[in-house]
Length: 259
Image 1 (spheres, rainbow, N blue to C red):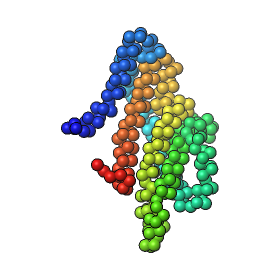
Image 2: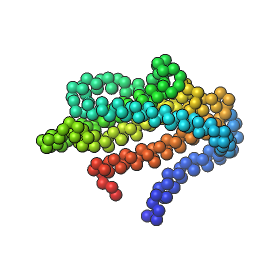
Image 3: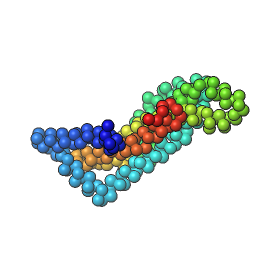
Image 4: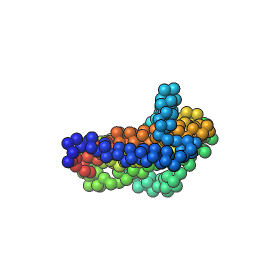
């Protein structure tokens, strides 16, 4: 057992990425690949340094993260109450389930064309796409979480005189919280992909637009650097925020025991 488990876990996580980096450099140089087809590591590093120095990277990253934050927050604020309502009311669930099954396959990228017609090119259209990517996943997971709470637990709380607000805040939401957090994590994954696609079409700032603009000028090194930034941002968001939150929530409400 390593003396420093966190360091060892980090090294195991980074090792495949370093191997990929090494293979990338070896293949590009040994095969003599044209920079316009695929750049080498040095060219990508130079392009990244340029975007950092002139401030364009910070501007694109800030725009993308802001859209994700707003779209996700709006989706959470609406989807959780709706999911709870569907979980406690069979009538509401039976009425809305066919609609959710229909629209869930359209969530995200499929909304880009009509979003640009409704909101124009910019913040509104992209936020709407992100909202749709998160909304259906979180609603459905909230429904599953509420439905998974044992009826005996609800009956016991009601027999002890729990009000509707107490039932919501101390039984339903805590019981459904692990599913809700899992839904948020999954929905954000869909939202991140939808964001990049939407920014290629519906805006003039953001990481997706950065890739699209670089393509027009055959700046493959900028395209690859942008792809790396997108991947790193998602890894950081998932591993430093979403995964610990999901794990802590599951441990907190007794689904697993902390080691």
